[in-house]
Length: 147
Image (tube, rainbow, N blue to C red; front, side):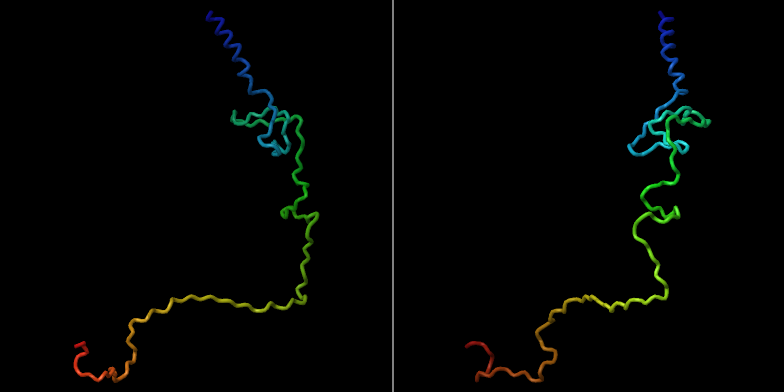
């Protein structure tokens, strides 16, 4: 009984030991983003000999069914680093240095300021009081109390 279980287990584990030497079908992780291997678009292609991080030595993979990728993109966009003129768009013309210049713009100046509110009056005594203060005369003498 034990021999039969051990034999069945060893037969079941044998294909797993040889799984690293087969081929892989490359499926991109995001749609529209190609998988490039050595200048070949390997999206939905068969790759043989790719060990990845499994071994310490590098093996050159073979890609079956991939297409070569053009290193210079032929798209409708302008890349200034490519050193070529754009296919369409605004044509920049540098004016000559001795051209007639337009009139200068009129000057414009605007300013803002801020200040505190004026202080309230300190008292109701005038600053320069008169020399003589006249009291009202009602004809009576003595203290102004009612009698």
